[in-house]
Image 1 (cartoon, rainbow, N blue to C red):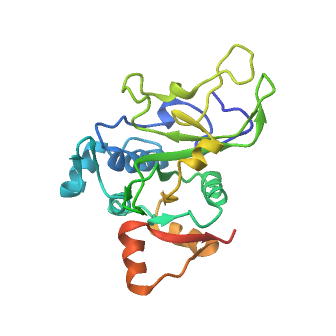
Image 2: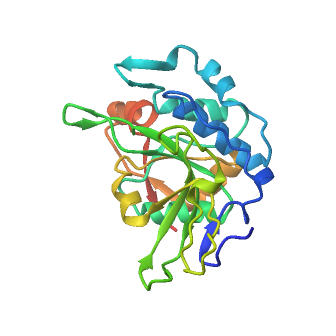
Length: 247
């Protein structure tokens, strides 16, 4: 089924074979999201999230502090680049994040993003949950006249209770004709909620090669300046590069 005309998606319809996505296990989002993103880019299930868990090795901790666990943010880029795909560890928190993300979606580029935020004292370090951004909508009116604007993701732990994972979980009748419309991915997030839940701005666009990624980044991005030593540490391990959108 095709998506409504106001929807922008990396994949034009909800044909199951075009969406080779996997559900995650406990705290596996940092490995499942890059596996899902690459498989969506390839249009087939080539990489398994369990393989990425194994590759993360000692960096993956299912339970670190109570229920918390997973992998550090920078491992996402390491997993993606390790299989020949192009990306970088970046943050959009000081720029027009929507412009960057929408440009990538319009080019058919899946983007691993981190929702929520982990805090250490007064500092925000990494996000809480990795998902794959796969689409967005233009503003549109639903059947009741309400105004909607949305982002669409593949969330490997949605629904939260673990049952019923699949492309159908965000199908909904928006136009009021009694038939649910299909939307990209498996989870729809209202624009305001999405922006509020994206405080770190951490993102990993997934290109077929590093050369293609670098050409896009050179054409569209600048990097905010920081103190040399501390900046290099933040860029590579903690917050990612502070990217500024040039358009």
